[in-house]
Length: 372
Image 1 (cartoon, rainbow, N blue to C red):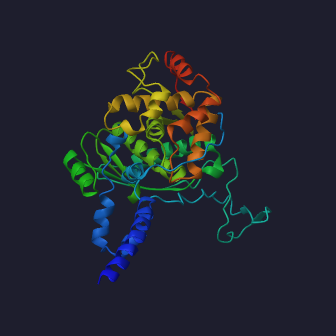
Image 2: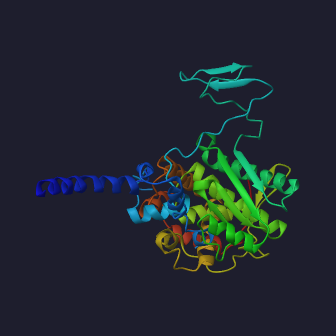
Image 3: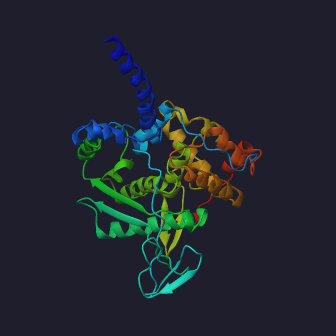
C-alpha cells in the first residue's frame, strides 16, 4: 500500500504542475474531459466579471514580448474570454465587376472571372472603399434601419482609420453581435445572465461571446456606446490583448466619430470645451502606463480621460502615429501577451525622449478634431 501511495503521489506531483501550466497558459481544453456542458458555461461566465465600467477604470525598437504572470493573465481572461492565438481571419477584398485577382504562394498575381481557390484572398481595387470588415448583427426593439446603416457607416470609417494607421495586411475581420436592451432593468438582468456586473455602466463587451450588451438611451448616446463597444471588438480581433489605456483610449477616441460624404471626423466634445481646451485632470503618459494594475482603485473618469488624451496626442502627429503603429503591431505579433510598461516606454522613447513634457505642452494648447 505504501508503495502504491508513493507512486500516486509522485505522479500527482508531475501532472499537477503540467495541468496548472496549461490552464494559466490559456489552453483550457483539458477541462472538457471532466466538466459537463453546463459546468463549462458556468466556468466560462465566471471569467467575465470585469465590465466596461471597470475597463474604463526606442532604444530597443523590437522589444521582447513577455507574458503576464498567471494572476494578470487570468485578469485578461476575465476581460476578454479564452486566449486565442489565431486572433482573426485576414480581411478579404471584395470582387470588382466579377473579376478576381490574388497572389499565389509563388508571389504571382492572378486574375480570373472564377472564384479563387480556398485560402486565396479576393481583391478590391484601391479605388473601392467597401471592404469585408464586419459581420455585424444588431438587435433591439427601438433600433431602426437608419440606426443600423449609420452605425455601419461609422464603423467602416473607424476601420479606414485603423487601416490607414496599421496597413491593410494587419487588419482582421470582426464578428460582432450587439444587443440593445430597452430598459435599465432589462440591461442589468442581461449583463448578470452573461456573468457581468452592470453597476455604473451602460454597455459591456464580452469577447468570448463576440457580443456587446447596451442599455437603450437617447439615439446619440446609444450610438456612441455602440461604436465604443465595437472598437473593443476590433481591438480584440486585430491586436488581441492590450494595455487597458490603449484598449479604452482607442474606444474613447473613435466613439465620437461622425461621417459626412465618406469622410470621418473624430471630435472630442466629451473631454474638450467649446474653445478647444481640455476639461478635467489627466495623468502623464508614464503614470498611465504604470497604472495597469490600478484601474479598480483609481478614479475611472481620470483613467478614461487620460487614455483618450494620450491616444488623441499620438494620432495628432506623424511621430505619434508611427509609435502607435509599432506598439499595436507588436501586440498583434503575440496576441495572448501584453507588453509591460517598460517595453511600451522604450517604443515611445525613440520618437519622444521627453514624452511627458511634450504631452503636457500638447494638452495645454487648443485640442482639434481629426479627419480620417
